[in-house]
Image (cartoon, rainbow, N blue to C red; front, side):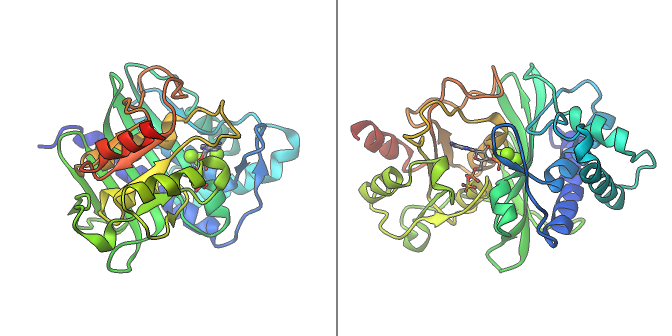
Length: 324
Ligand SMILES: Nc1ncnc2c1ncn2[C@@H]1O[C@H](COP(=O)(O)OS(=O)(=O)O)[C@@H](OP(=O)(O)O)[C@H]1O
Ligand SMILES: [Mg+2]
Ligand SMILES: [Mg+2]
Ligand SMILES: [Mg+2]
């Protein structure tokens, strides 16, 4: 019997429903709303968070959920129409008889929990800019205990697998391996393994699409020093972790953008992806080789940048970074 069996079952079902909602919204390319920090959010981000938080709360009422979104903007009178649309999408994808505007707001705000001894962290749509471009995005959910990620689920509805089938669901439980499967019910999971260095066709690196989220120039020079001369795979969201876990890239570099020295990474942008790569025999640290901190805060205040590798090249990447 797997550890965290109930958590895994509920989390997979919640992410699967959210994925259907997001794909439904994506067909229409919704207008982006702007948050106070000027970053975009859509009706799908809110709908996905409402669905997932409510399902988690029903099953695990005592677990705090640390989610990216909150309702402060949505509660404003001028957002009434947006809230109505969100509620309709939630109703369509969720057979619960208490889907009302009031409850949807309440469910989204279940995501206002604090980092604790045991908590969930949720990015209802990671890569919102990718989602808006009809590109890659991920629904990322992780369970953390004593600062250690125990379970990670990542839904990538727009990501094709190696057979060209669109939509990959990644699942990892600590010490039990990482798997990917399609979104169908009862789909057969395939065990994941990072790429070996002698597999030259997959010895590539991944980075963000948005140049503002990282330091693409520096990333390309680091990759060159490691002998990676092919162009980077530019992809939005934690789907990049999925590429490394499934051996389609050896490295994902996320070095801080020099123009934004005060930016700190959010736990929900990394927790699910990190366990999926680690359980596929990969390695994840910050650019100084420090473990990512999921123990203290929503922001990973003492980490700088993120390095995700197949494991084999990790020390070498850190050495190159140190020398630069
Ligand atoms: N300056 C800066 N540095 C690093 N990271 C940042 C920065 N600004 C934003 N973000 C976060 O990046 C998340 C999306 O990351 P991606 O790797 O998908 O970026 S990209 O879309 O490919 O550019 C994005 O997640 P979502 O908001 O969930 O899309 C943000 O949390
Ligand atoms: Mg965002
Ligand atoms: Mg994100
Ligand atoms: Mg997000």
